[in-house]
Image 1 (cartoon, rainbow, N blue to C red):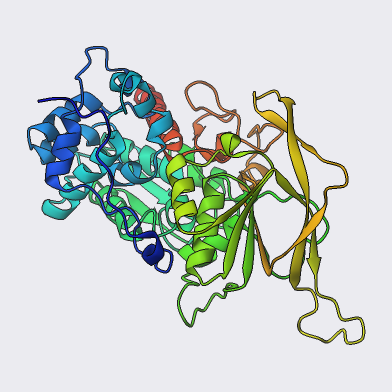
Image 2: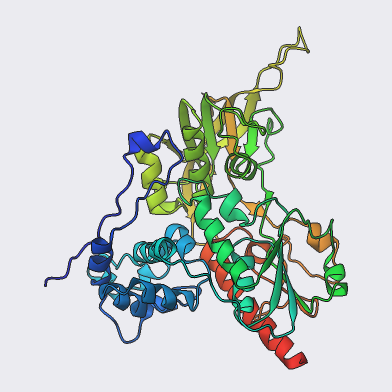
Length: 470
């Protein structure tokens, strides 16, 4: 049978339909399509795709099982190294990781590894009724701070080795950025809840509404009998541009906007946590978070949504798939533009006017690309005299986040870098003995799968550390 040079298409909702609902955009492969896509794998002996995966999933092995129709066996292979397969199959940037290493991709399109992984995980979650079995306890206790991808991965890997793990989550629902940051239409919350339930079956305890650094400190965790601590608290401190008007009503960080919508259900008709709906919305930034915020605003009823990004489409850091979905849904891209001021309504004759302080527009300047910067990207340069104003009712700043300083400020001897990221060595160990860290709390905002890789590394190091103490 001739090898198909292209990936099998992922079926999706029609753009004009999905732009008005929060249902998942991608509908997933059926069995026949998953088998056909897995059959494109060349089963390379050197397995370059595995080296591109931060958690080193045995990719050719699970694809071989799918090809033969052994979907549960494929799931078990994935689960050997990944605690969140249904999540990774949906949100990982496979095109820049495992798939970019695929040998088939040299001549044709690479194997759709993520799409098949998603199918396998969904098949398991639909057909498997047996709960995960908790291993025999080994007598050691470990605390994990944060229930995002790095924390859940670390907890899962340690639980499988018999550790008694407690995950402490600051918010009221476990999942971290997976539940507050990624919209339902990209990652259904039921998927995250299922993955968390699997960890609970392995014996992991999850304590919500516990803010480490306020409710409890790292030192108090050790006093409670935990022998090691993993910090996977993420990067929840939003960045702003520090331009005039950012304090106006109607200016959000993407973090706040998405949290209100995703976790606090502001999309409901009568929400307890309000959010601005309708009007013209400008989203500043070009990453995946910017795409998520823009597409969420559209689904909340915005009349027009614009992405404002200071570089060109070639430099846009968001996943190609997310950009294409946004364009299909009618979101406008104002490229090579940068905000310089946010304008607001003022009525000096009546300071009691409730409209006072609301966003009415945004002044932007046009940009051109100069020489590459230290990261190799061409530096955006303002074009003098090119300022213009766009009419907007809401501005969402999606220009990155930094680690929250709360844990650092309440933990003696914990060293951080100038960006607030916790400093760790090659084993994930911080400057405090027995305290490990990983994910966005170390690197700043990055990908789900890279955070998982850091959690996996820390779990291995903690196991070695406590095994040596025994």
